[in-house]
Image (cartoon, rainbow, N blue to C red):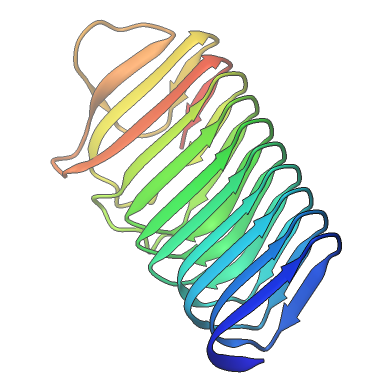
Length: 212
């Protein structure tokens, strides 16, 4: 498929797209969406009930939303990546974008080899496991929060900036050389790594936190 903007819509059925060039808006009320080997300025995917799969999709801006289902993204490159599921896990492997926004109301968030300057990861109920690429900037700004679940976060080796780790029920652990500020607690760590302007804010209401 090729053209300035491609519009695809299904009331009840899955949609698969490959080798698309240009912007696209794809929507289905009941069914999955798969997009691979495609590129362009804008990609907007929405499923009322079904999974969404992205593979090798370099778009400037990509938004994928599903009410019931998982979201999987592999091989993304662009300016902004936004993946939101109301009920389902979100998985990202090898993504490069200025901003990465991952959200699920019920499910696990997992990201591997992610290169970004701004990372948002939020789960209403589920664990979060993030591993940043070494190509992330030293002033990375990342926020990861979940109400129920543990958080594991691997920062880029050159990270420098503020660190805040907080859990209500669980423990916190960091392998980074954090200069602590304020009171020391098994459930809360606040401090600074180096002299940079980055920030890591990791918070869970119930679960452990590990910063690597």
